[in-house]
Image (cartoon, rainbow, N blue to C red):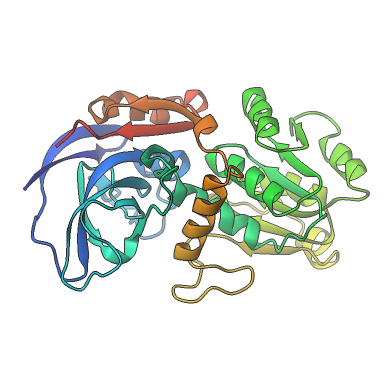
Length: 343
């Protein structure tokens, strides 16, 4: 069958192309007609520009182009394999699958999760795989009710982390970002304070608010300076999760003084570093996190729509990704492609 797909054909270039897709559904597969696919700006920009520091990508000679991106989408099941029992045609689903900026996706049934509540739109649901990273980042801090928490970096991941930190009982929830609009949005979504980390006295302000430093922090900037600043804000015996992908590192951290001696824990929170089958305290499966987020969203304790700042046609992909490649500072917070009129 024919399908439409957004493909990164070479560094800094995205194209909307027609592709061949098998319509033969395997025993453990489902075919999903895509309704929306959300952009994960950090991951997709790194792939778009040809950043060599990405797992599984070779540095030479062409950075493995073309590439198919997108891992956070939603749609309607049109066909199911003979072994699939948890989904039927017509079910609305969340799809967590690499390459899902496509009008149809043939995926393993284990990567399609039923939308359990009628109040959740497929546009909102398309962002849940991205939000799941943030939920894991907060879970792994082992945040307890009444503990202070810092979220450093307020893109999509950081803004979701603010909401989950609030839901988990963080007090206060402190947000930090260079962008004033993002700080304002963080306050609207539940942060108690929002600071510009470039301002003089930033770390001292955080320490004064928390009587010596935050109990835990979610580092989302993915840059060494952000991690260094977070270490300056953390309390002795504090916990930091690395949610943002720190692809480029240097030796600016004083490991003995900042980590070893004060007993600070730094915890990797990549979404693949989670159990596949059975959840445990602080470490839930993707399926369990997706259901937890649906409950929060359906009960009004999680907000997605406020974070959606641009709805684009897939046919405009070249323009959308050109901004992401060349002017990332101008890229909107939440960007989603509407595939409902595409075949």
